[in-house]
Image (tube, rainbow, N blue to C red; front, side, top):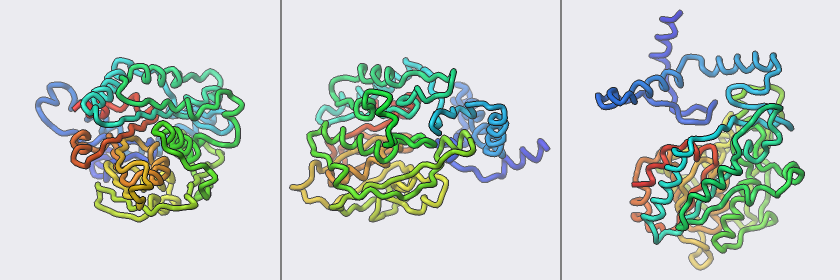
Length: 371
């Protein structure tokens, strides 16, 4: 049996992205004597085996069924909370490591004093709704952590703390029927993204579109997201995905640089029939995307904008197309070029860093910003 598993592991096609865990999987480690000497090769090899172990998804699902039978409220790092909400565990991060990420942003701002920089940090659902966690479950305060991050930033950029525009200030108002986050997924809803767009627009002196300026349409009512996939809890009510369509639409052309594909839509309907329905927004994760919008120069609030982001930006991007003629969007996890050079080559003088708290505190790729 062990020989069979070994052969299966060797010859099974490997994927590079886990829909189950919503992350890039460890690639086959590159061999070098320096990496062996530093023990990095052994660490990467261990992660590679763990990430690509045969029947990993099936093992996770079986474990979940056993845990539910024991009335457990946590499985595979996912809590089953109140009102059908699932939450991912969030512990205290390494503040020294986190401080180096914040310092990288400070260094980037210092290296580009002519650039208008904004940093929007969105809490996750576990940070916004800690009162909905199951009994005895704890999570480190993202509210305090966001304050800590904001306090460490230098004055060369504008900090937008998601708690300021998502939190209405009391528990009752957070429990109304306007969902800020999907119950079963790690992203904010399109309404949450709209509130972020409105806050960012106002910080730049733009006049954001009101909700009345959109046709709000449901594109899926059967979304069971990444937390559901990872936690494998049964009997949960699916989430609804909405799209905000401007009543005065702006024509856009999206170019996915990774694959050299061009589309006249910011949405990929094919994902609505798949498990990963959030990838309806721009077709999922890409290293570099450019969006050109047909706005007359005299009507645009901005000519060019660079967004350095995680996937929280995907549902916010369509709102920005009503204000900016050219948008460049980089996912720092997959883009290996020099971001400062990219800005200079493309004449970009406005940039938005947009991350959720959970991603930001563990994203070592942010250190690329120092160079």
